[in-house]
Length: 154
Image 1 (spheres, rainbow, N blue to C red):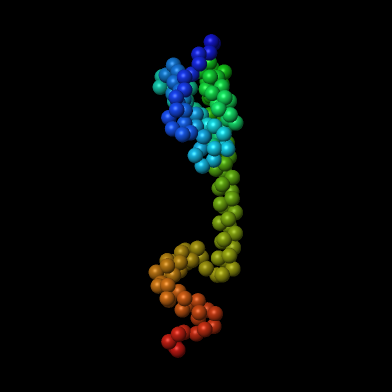
Image 2 (tube, rainbow, N blue to C red):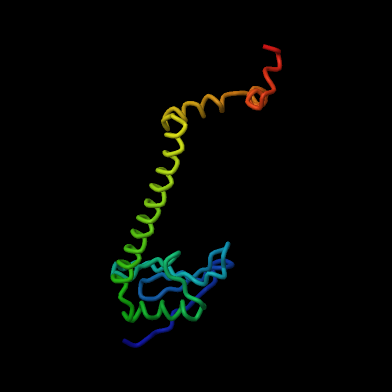
């Protein structure tokens, strides 16, 4: 298929927008980390399956590489269905890793609770009570714990 150049216009400091055959492209860099490169969003208004969002999944090192990716989408040189499936699989694996880390963290904390002889529910109840104390009461209790006694002599 013959390539037709996508015309680009600036939509902000870090965003360029282009349109071709019912596909709206946005190429942008994150405002907080422009060194990460360029991301591409495409929205197919004709419903031909040419939509994709590469943010946090696939970065392009240069503006030219991002534009080339958009051109490849338009001529069908990129298998977007496979790319979306790869993105979904990577996202699912990222979620599984996060859950494994969270389970390990929860088990470690549970060990601390068991050694202290309290349940997590009891801890939450105690935290709620402690958060309801005034700052002065908090400091008095800390002093008592450090052997200073009660300030009223009791």
